[in-house]
Image 1 (spheres, protein in one colour):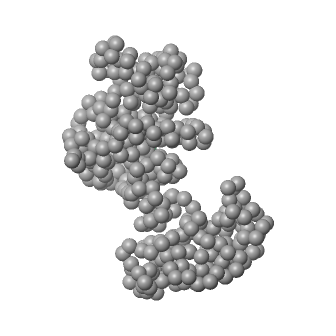
Image 2 (image 1 turned 180 degrees about the vertical axis):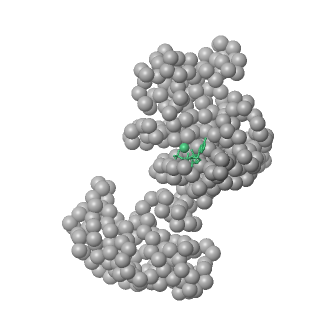
Image 3 (image 1 turned 135 degrees about the vertical axis):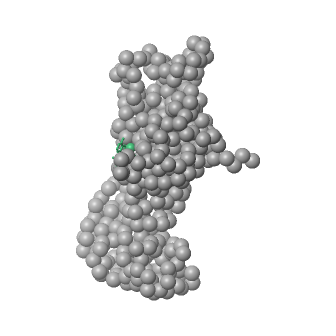
Length: 362
Ligand SMILES: Nc1ncnc2c1ncn2[C@@H]1O[C@H](COP(=O)(O)OP(=O)(O)OP(=O)(O)O)[C@@H](O)[C@H]1O
Ligand SMILES: [Mg+2]
């Protein structure tokens, strides 16, 4: 079995003057894998992609693609398909000419090039639009041309830098599904850059959450969402409530944590000793709401609170519930505003299972 990763970054670093944009990154991407770099603006996502593509050189560290070191190799010798945020299509060329550009650079014969262009356009569902120019296309179609241009060279990897951010929400969601399907069908290792958490959760085999030039946590979407290891990761993805507390001790393998609002049971890996100050992180959809105190049950704890705000978002109502000690708890209910659990001023009980309550180090 070939265990060699499609891409391996080892201690990759990039300085711009005194600024450390990428701070010693380690990352493996398996053959056929879809890895997303997710993080706030300026955390080094594009710089990382540009180093892999060969547009800029690292100031330290090693980049290997298919086991081969990339040091000093120019972009066109790396055989990577790259799509930028702004697509960078040539406005004076037709769709077919834009897609064929990389093949001409590689010296492919005319017939073979025409066949490959037709294949690539079919892949992105643009057959028949060969003769149009970029200005005669919609945003989504332009995005597809850029994708076809990246795929036509039969790259070893696909590098996509926020390719969907210029599209409206509906088109973006459609293209998410199409790009994922195409990537799986071609089985091509892909790095996708975004700061859109929804995109990252929907498309990735693994998400690398970046902060200040480093990967803070990497894992499958469910793990990143449900088991964040740091406060930064917890807050960057999805709505979450953070409650300060202090570890009281262990109970049947769970952590008992005292907070101003009452005790909660939590999970942590590894469990910190009694007395440690921790932050508890709870997702809104993991909180079971009731309008009366629920009977006690093993492995779960209940906080009492008062509904402060109720915002209807269509599929549910988002609540902020005030508990003793101040910070509001974000919860959600199917009730519509004004009814039972979604009435401002209503008393509610919020039950959380230990496995849905993560204790994060301070
Ligand atoms: N050519 C450059 N010269 C100097 N500084 C740079 C250069 N390119 C990037 N930087 C800096 O490096 C840091 C990382 O930039 P990068 O473009 O990789 O961020 P990003 O994560 O892609 O952000 P965004 O989400 O806004 O695209 C930023 O602080 C940026 O200002
Ligand atoms: Mg960027």
